[in-house]
Amino acid sequence: MSSKTTIATFSTCALFFPMFACADFVGDSTANIELRNFYFNRDFRNGPPTTQRDSAAEWAQGAMFRFASGYTTGTVGFGVDALGMLGVKLDGGDGSGGTGLLPADRSSKNGRGSQDEYSKLELTAKAKVSETVLKVGSLAFRNPVVQSNDTRLLPSTFQGGMATSSDIDGLSLQAGKLRQIKVNSSSDYQDFTGNRIGGVSDDFRFAGGTYAVTKGLSTSLFYGNLENIYRQVFGGIVYELPLGDKQSLKFDLRYSKSKEDGNFRNLDNRAANGQVSYSLGGNMFTVAYQRMSGDDPFPYIANSDPYLVNFVQIGDFANVDERSWQVRYDYNFASLGVPGLTFMTRYVSGDNVQINGGHSGQEWERNTDIAYIVQSGPLKNLGLKVRNATVRSNFGNDLDETRLIVSYTWALW
Image 1: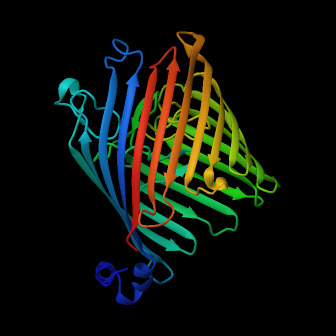
Image 2: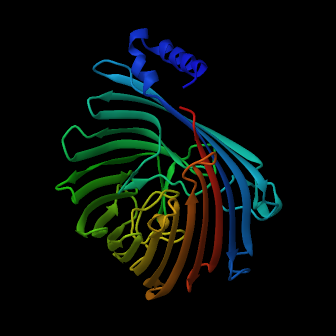
């Protein structure tokens, strides 16, 4: 850390805490800048009049400054985190917006243009006692009942408070209350809505934990409640079995049960899903199955990520009564002496979707990712990724999609 940076950080701490408490606050702090160049093109293959448009395409540059302080000394340590974000449009004429990279410009042609730029400032206060941490303010995290999204130019965040604890050996606990969400392409917080089920709420509460029974076996139990919309209970088991030199078998089994909350309409969903992965050297082969039961689709907060094995690049395969299976192949080229280069391809097929009282709905999605991160030299941490997806459905949109992402992370200290 440079002397100027050290003085600035130390001065910030001294404004709020006694001088003797600031050493760990400064010494354990970290900061980095991430640049993210993102091109997104989605082609609506069924075209008008089904979608009223042929395609959506945008190109944008994002920049993120992340700062995480250490904690002041004492029984209770205090700290602060900050995340500043900026998104700038590079290309995306009238009528081609709507990819989620940039905020919509409603005054543009057909209301489908995008704004030239937008920014966000996220602040989080934190306190720590032993191995228990309380955070209040802007939050970005993932667990089986609520997950923030980071698949666009800038990540989404939640507003609220949460506590995490790992004081008990092998047991990780989480609990919290969230008030609003700031979606990827917005500078403002907004109330929660239920994905595909509707309703509006400003109160999501969750609690749960994961216990490591052995080195390779863990179990999870979580509860989530979007007030006046739904209640959800999740249980999961992950077991990894070593089979020999550079071989292993991993089982990931998940089950969720969701019901309505308060005066919301009757809601009933049961989601059983799981996957098995076999790793051999740089190869990984995965098969997965997902089954929706009940009268409703899988409920989760709109613009967040559902914790489902068949939630992929575009689809979640979580419609009413849907059955879906997946085959996937990953390869890490480090096994061939090219560390940082990875490849993934998968195919997901779903059927039995309830449509107009029947079960004739069918859909499939194919994804391919190729990514490379420079491992050393002046361009270390430069990342290149190409993501391609194809979706076909007899009840929704047919899509072809390509994403090109160039990222660079520079550690300041």
